[in-house]
Length: 168
Picture 1: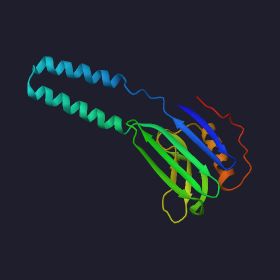
Picture 2: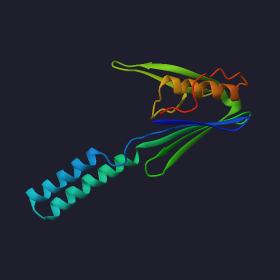
Picture 3: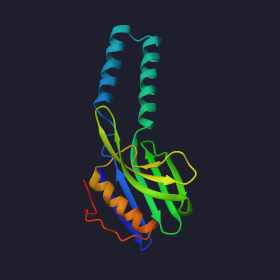
Picture 4: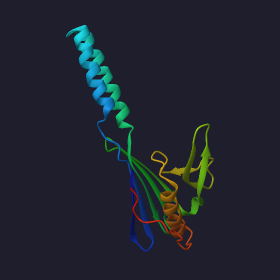
């Protein structure tokens, strides 16, 4: 994963987390080998081609939900835009108005086997927090930089971030 911070103006920052996941991986090669084996076993029948087409379609659907990039754009006196870009180019954005932002926090989620650190925006009048970088889940040092930068823009706090601007 890679992380970039862009300071567009004195009152605007953009934090981008990009996935380094390969678009074609070993699972895709296993699918091709399985398809060739199926054709070898069943012969060149319509059933074999239908099953192969179904497996390929399922793989394409799974790939379309693969997150490639997550972005948080913070603009003073305006708000925050959280954006997720998927493998096929589809993107989902959510804008949170400054007047609705109650707080920006770093929190821990504890499960049976993992402790996940995440950054979230608490929105007034909503039951759920907006989790930033929720699919790529960067490390704590990356979250701290985005956290301090976002709070310095939204709440006019001093930026105490000592973390370097690029992380790989």
